[in-house]
Image (tube, rainbow, N blue to C red; front, side, top):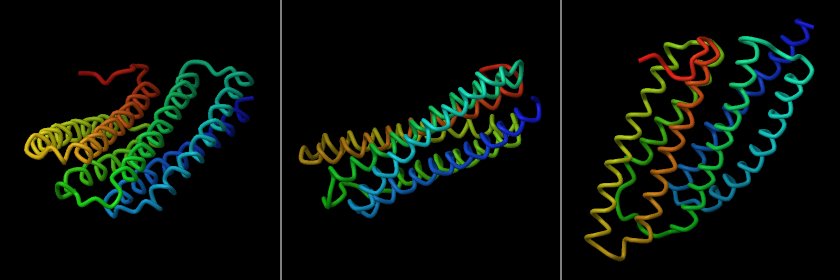
Length: 216
């Protein structure tokens, strides 16, 4: 029974890593569609998110099968419970990336009201967080998980700067409102992506220590 559980968990871990890689990819697709104002890529991003939804359902069913058939206890139970939460967070990253693609379509070929510097920077940090969060999960590295979680503060600060700048531009020129609000939403979506990645790091901490939050 133990060997069977370990085999099933090993397969699940491999699938989770693949799912996480999909999340990192879709963030990249979404932000590239915005930067290049490529509506075709935005549509591809939306289609890719549908694939992620199907994958999430498959993974959730795998977790439920493990719970029902193997009845894990202690740390094993924490692992499966954390993975279920992780699946939800990764799926939400896909949803938010889809939202960015939809904003790209709404902006279309309009000339940008400001150079896109901070928003791509937010996306780069978020993608790096996703990659490192998955590494933390594989290695059960709580120290690294904490460091990755603190990167969320950087994203939060950039979001505040972007918000301030966009509101300034909107107040200065009323015709900027439509695009300005779309860019503001994109920045907000990226900020939320970083939040969900932080949740994954907290899940690693819970698996290893049994604590849902990092020690102060």
